[in-house]
Length: 324
Image (cartoon, rainbow, N blue to C red; front, top):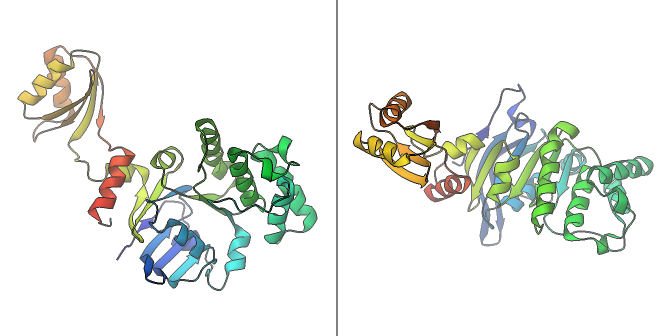
């Protein structure tokens, strides 16, 4: 069973955001979702939905929004996507991966239309459209046709239309897709501040590990239609790393400390002229490392537990096929 739980101390019910039980989705012979079980609480502010292309991320999001049918049980904000799709979409904002604009519309017209589709009266939808575009940094371009927008501006419009009805939950599908480094930084900065400024939880579906590491506090990893991991980013990076692994940085003379550590039976991997990753042998702890450094005349800068990179942690999860 691909069970995965993200919990916290907010006191919210497990089903407050997402609750999945044995969710399957088939497209003919393709088994896109294979018995997904996962629960996400409101205490998770920005959740990274990770996985390579074809892992089932976009399919899962469409199931949760009630856009496509599925087998199994699911709840989004306590509602069933199969019977309560319109009610879910009225409380959820969705930023799709691809461009789905209506040709000839300005940004403010598109956002107001999205607001009306979410159930807002026309006047209020127009007011909120202006506010959402201001937040997305497009107030000076809001009357221009979207057809002439750059890729970065189009991504901002998609974010604005997802925010226009003040949703409780945002699904962002590849929000930095096609952006140059500056536009990508701007988009990630907007995502980071959304939970506090707009009071919403966010699920970011992406294959970019650096984006998740930068903006997410928790992660769900999918592979071949199944959930392989769910937990905090720290838990993900600690996965599979020995509790005896430490990262040591010195001011100079790293070779002297390395020799002393090897002499005590430690395994040492030098990562720079002043840094190393060390697997401590039985009987040697951080205090012992400090004593060895002092005896060798080496000044320590830092010594801290080793954490895997996001790429290492992700590859470990995907390759081992295990579920926490």
